[in-house]
Image (tube, rainbow, N blue to C red; front, side, top):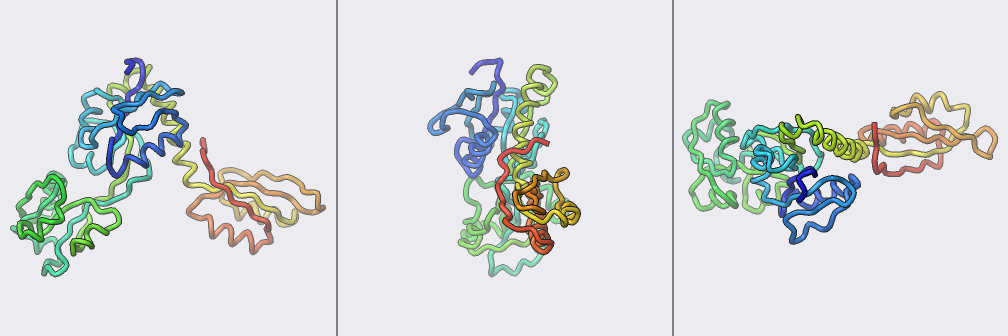
Length: 289
């Protein structure tokens, strides 16, 4: 790998791998498949991608071995490295949760006083119970912690939960959520202070933010009577005023705009009531604001 390129560490194999590679490709980065590779070189951007264990990414970023890293927020909360978080990437959603067996008499955190808690996140667990003023014995486990209550060596577990299916399969129920997590982009502070590297990072951030912004919007085209245009403009909470073009049919216009995902259906229903027709909805691939 050339020293004049940025280095980005990503998870080699795990729950974030596929989505991370997909996100990078959506950002216009061209590189060979990560399968069986330790690193890839981007053909169209000064970036080398390094594939490592997710647990090692915060350390690599902190030490300066790499400039950037993509990892779950859960690992940042656990290890507290000296890094700069640049972006929430809006995928890899999960939560660190406290769970007990379904038949357990435990109803609240206080019921676990002096009990044993098994977890792969001992620092986060200790911090949580200290805030709750509850004394517990924390057992650090590498691997599957769900089996520890079955074996009778722990009264509860603290583990990452995404769909909850693993907990259900092991007859566990959640009694408290410690925090939410998602994939985040980290940077080494020294890389941000280096003028040359900082400029390249800024260019990469423009790409990433463009992909993230696009996820929040839909591109909409519709036809409507020209006389209702003022009402249409008020109904569309777009980025700016919509684009308007006359149609061959007198008195009718074509309207194009971008609508936020979180108000999309309410807006479409309102437009239909106002008299808009032939509404065409397209995904937004990139959006540079």
